[in-house]
Image (cartoon, rainbow, N blue to C red):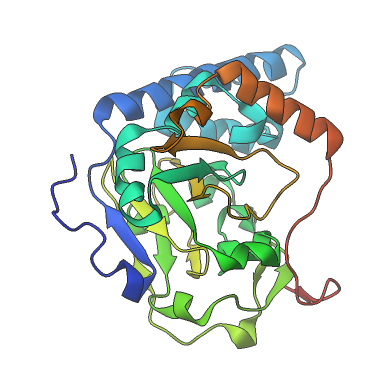
Length: 300
């Protein structure tokens, strides 16, 4: 459990904080078990179609997905929260201790933002040449509409286990969030801050223990480096904003996860959430929301 009487100390100055011990061992094990089942289903399906010769069934959870990705990158297609939509992931979006912590800064009316991700970062030796796993410097505001800049959107980055420098944990530029949104361009490996606009600030390496949660402003520049370890580094990105404020992606479903004034508005029905996403993805299959300074600009 988080024991710091003021866990948000320094957040306004730095634009990030590590909330220690928010998740328990049971929380993490539920996520691992959920993901292991999904991985097994996909591996079996690809194996039956002749696309995956070795199931690597004896490999532990933290190792297996990297081996499968090396042998058949297709196993990772659509492996994200809004595509998988499992009950366990839905319940994680409502995690009470996380919402308790966020309420201290966002207030009592909190909605889950539609921008959510599940990420697996395999060892770089198994994904050589694939820079997709090494996210470039960016702000999360770079993937939202400008209207969302008016109110805070907090990113909660949750490693499913330890996240060390050797494993390619997050790095952030402290204090830069106070400058607001910086110009972004496209690169070979995703939307990034335009190189000449990237502030020359010493990065802070955010190593985490199992159960820790990194919370960042949507304007906090961050990136990750190659995973030099022998295990896959898993993480969840869950975002939250004040209910009624722009989400940044109005075509995708946001929903109330905490309300002291109107608790009846909290979405606790998994089947409704699943249906909302199914409909949104059917109606907006290729909606693109990255905010690029120049759509034709490219950085190699």
